[in-house]
Length: 406
Image (cartoon, rainbow, N blue to C red; front, side, top):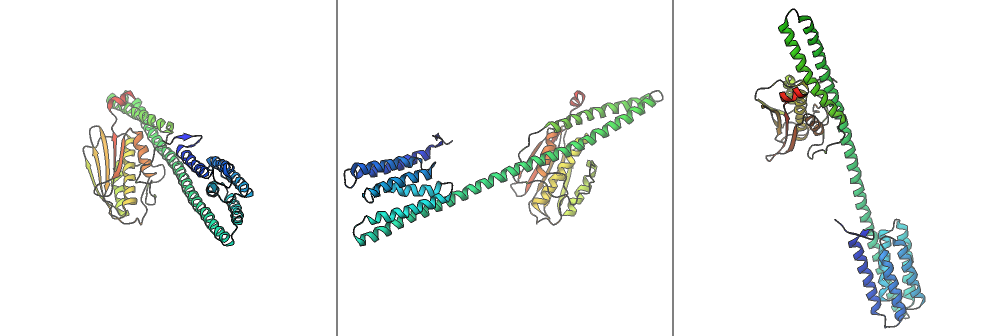
């Protein structure tokens, strides 16, 4: 953490104090020698004090130093050691001034000062030598300041561009999350509407069969109760999706979903797990080699959870096709345990650029993370040691106790 003094970094303040101290010492070294004596030392000390503000007010500091240098020339003292302050002020105004015009004006004033200082040399040969030497030193300092200024502005432009790209990336992520949540909410709404339709049909059947066949009527009522609990749980998740406002950070390595050119799903249609073989065939036709395995006894999943599993498989294969490329081999496993469904897709990364677009249902990793979060699951993505990429999603199954409480 950088320390601040007088609104500036402590390191910069310490450096400027050291520069001013150096100028003061140089001025004191000639205090007892003519010309100027202590008066010249006072002018040098004033220049040194002015240099303390060379970063925050470079143009004003240069103007004050130029006036003090003019006093020195008017007094006929000639070039003195503390005139190094003039070069420091010239460098500072070129580097730190808001407009380069101030640096150009300072360069012109410095050129006039070089001529005036050289005129105070009596010998003609010495005059020319002094003029050339002063001009070379002053010009080198001015060009050095210009070079540092150019690099400084270039770095600032890169930082500003990076900040702009980061803001755009965050805005795109928020928009993607909002769109994906809208999609999830719409699909959950379809699930709830379907459940309500089933409840109405079963309730009507139970009412008509209550006297004729009580056993079938009781079974219909049981279906109504089970379906109602599932619908209530899906409604709770739907409300949670609509209430959530924070956007998760996109993980590195996957940059979102691929295009949806091969998707054969019409809008507002809710696919089911029984359609997974058809989905895998579409990806195989797009160029992936898929080795799919299913372990465990598949339980009867709630419609919303079944849809989430389908979408996770779809997006995992989409990312494999997009990033690993055509011809890559994907090991896809769907494991059913007593308390969760685990989807794992691992590609070998050995493919070639995609020729045909990949079927997709949303925004890749952002969409997967949103869907898994709705069902209190976990999503793990990352590179594999042997090469390629792996996506693993664990979706806990709703317990009977939870359904009853819901």
